[in-house]
Image 1 (cartoon, helix red, strand yellow):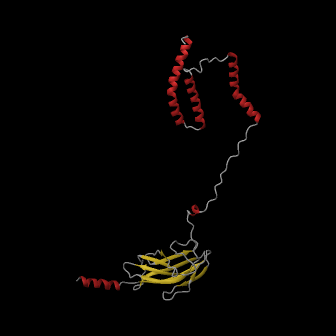
Image 2 (cartoon, rainbow, N blue to C red):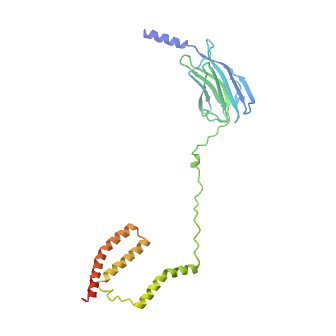
Image 3 (cartoon, one colour):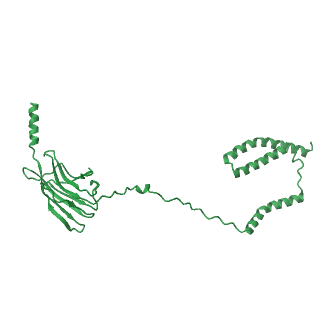
Length: 272
């Protein structure tokens, strides 16, 4: 029983209504609507190859009908196939069909669709492919089409891969030094307090009789070490290093300073 049903289904498929093409026609026009060529297509014999210029437009119209009743139908799938026989490249372009079976396709070379394969001097074979769930599939070879040689479109990121110009650094001009007289005046202004201090010391006299005693010299040396550390920080050291070395120096400085104060107090009390 199943075997007989399969044969009946196969027979029904073979006898399904086929699709036919009615009134296929093409028109080639320029941007100002001037018709360069217009003709009806024959399904049994191809016309002379069609040629489009860089700004021309190809218009293709046809109607899809059932071969038995001649009623316009809308297939489930309708495609135009552009095939380059020399390179093997092909492109498939969907075509919109109305419920009554009428279809219209335009190919504007100013803005060609992305489905068109790369073209050279070889023609493209254009065929129409029809697919339906209730009709037998059909394919019609329409014509050969010459298109202008395609140009590879520029990728939006192409400029990122071009050779960039050499980087030229621009430096500020050297700062001009002030006149020597102005520099000398400011240097004398900075050094003047020291000159006043030395002058006053020369009048009142500086008495440090115990400066180099064994009780005072360690404290004085450690104070000098702090001054050296500050100069070293200005020249090379970082703040963290200064704090580390200063913390280390602070420990003996505290004891040396305490010893120096004790010795000074003894001297003033006349005990030594």
